[in-house]
Length: 590
Ligand code: GTP
Ligand code: SPV
Ligand code: MN
Image (cartoon, helix red, strand yellow):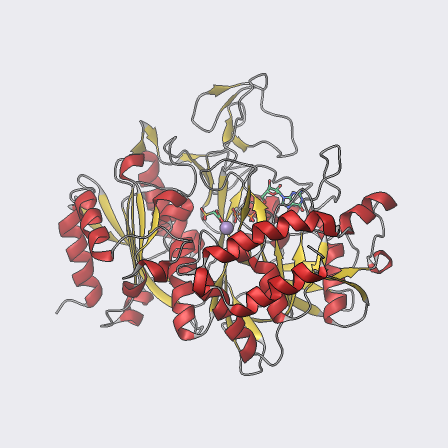
């Protein structure tokens, strides 16, 4: 008798009508065959799906060029289909689930004709973790199959683990004909199902990532009492060898990968990585918050990654241990067959192909690599991988950091007064928009907890859930806010960032350990400058003062904007958050 998985795959095959169905086992041998298929058999706009890069300089690395219209997440085409709109909240696009399924079935009919349907069995999280989830995704492009092998733990054993259960996590994906008018990323939280058509881009197509591990998982977390968050997990080791585990939430393209891979500028301090994008957080029996990373790879922004800014990532990209490493929409140096991107820290190639495969020279005004060009690389290639990474129970979190790109107003770092006050600080977070999603760049948008595009239900209820989790912990993490991006009047960053961010993490750890005092302001505790370890850093006193300045006058328009955000959620916004708002408003004299 057919299993639940086989029945479901059959049903999808009848709809999509592929020429064959191929069940993946996640092995390296198979990955070679899939890459080969991407080089020889599969094309996008007349170009092969994969191209081998210089294997001497970039072992096991391949280049992928996407369809030119398919370079980022598409938030306006992303829907969360709860039975009612209220549950999805004003933070999500909503469609009635039955209507959405009818629409998707129509778009899916025959969409894999002449193509292979790959069946991908994988777990999110270490298979031995009680928090791991067993998943099956279908796709019709080798790029997605191979990317999923890097980003998840793919194995046939998942099929046995699911056995006769019907409630496994389901992902249906087809690139269709890349038509932006037929592109939809649909979530059905109650069915544990994501159905995505028309895009091959990471967040739209690697369905274990944002779609399941954040949008659907956040909903599961709400029901089951845990959190799915857009967060880095890292262990910071001090010179005595003590490791403090910290999470950090920053919106897309605001510095998570760089933070997770940081090479410390302070002697004796080390950052060990456990993840650069997603954390699942559970309250442990010890009353602390424990974190696992459901993923096993990095899907990181290429531009700006260099030996100067992120040497650990450059090492991972060139390591050639796990097969393969992928580059998507970077430029290609025609002399050397190496990938290249803006901010790589080396001169541009004399002659290149740009991200679309067109001829490019340094004199051109256009960018050679797409601003959201990315690499996909196994976390096991990371030279700073934490030895706790494969521990099924995860790591205990002492501090949670929230941040965004704010060129003014927000100090380099401050600490919230308590959990509830910290939830408010994280909820009012804003960021100037970036290239990771298709919208105008550089506009301030409120992005509570860096989860605005990823929370799979009403964000008012989500903040309530955060407060409830806080009430369950006897030893909660302290909550901090950071901003690496404050600028001076000449539009220059005040803070060097990257490896120097360790100085901020050191202050965070000192506060966790209670070894330094801080200055109480209406927004929270701000460092005394004398408590920052600035050894080896040249930065002027006026710059430092400006980095930490809390100007209450400037907070008036900010708070008016925050009010608009809170109002958007009506009755769903917890009264505790409104109380925090009123207190801050009063203390700030606004
Ligand atoms: P997603 O993968 O989209 O979730 O992004 P991310 O949050 O992991 O961002 P990432 O680390 O890739 O950084 C994005 C951009 O921010 C890059 O252009 C970096 O060079 C820049 N950046 C990262 N950290 C810093 C910093 O400390 N200071 C400054 N000025 N820029 C930074
Ligand atoms: C992000 O946009 O936050 C990313 C890339 O990490 S994606 O996987 O596309 O979501
Ligand atoms: Mn992300």
